Image (cartoon, rainbow, N blue to C red; front, side, top):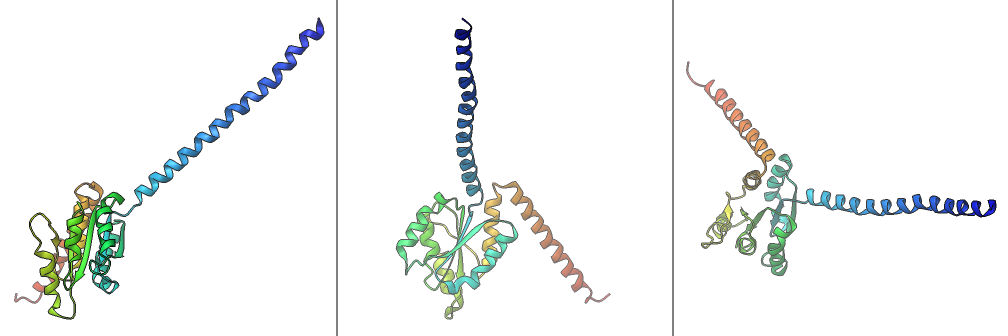
Length: 210
């Protein structure tokens, strides 16, 4: 009788030891999907919101001030060459897919015939800001007229010839419409402009007759 009582006790011990191990295993597997989800969320947060495109790398000196503005306001952006005439298939692909990649505003610079901003505006639902790039002939007037004279229903917000800085600021204002933090940065920027203009007035008034 004493031997039969001891046998059940010896059988219970292996079962009780295995249970904690079986419980720990699913806990490790559950932690992996959470880590991947966090990584995906982080990638979405750091995706660029503005795309700066141009017809050639020679346009970059004109377009760089737009990039500088976006950096100052902490707006992530991408920059690339998308030629409307030399790579039309890639231009169509870029224009149709930009909004699906998280882009919110497109800044497009072009010179001469300057079809890039208008063609992108025809392809994308996003706002397009056109920057006329001045070339050796006609001093950028051909670029300006090519971009600004868009047909009804296909708008391009065109800035002055070579004024990519304003294009960057306009992109920030568009984004700020749904971003309170960016709105505060724009208000601070405008206050700095006001203070700078007032300081210039004070210097000029020194030349006046008392």
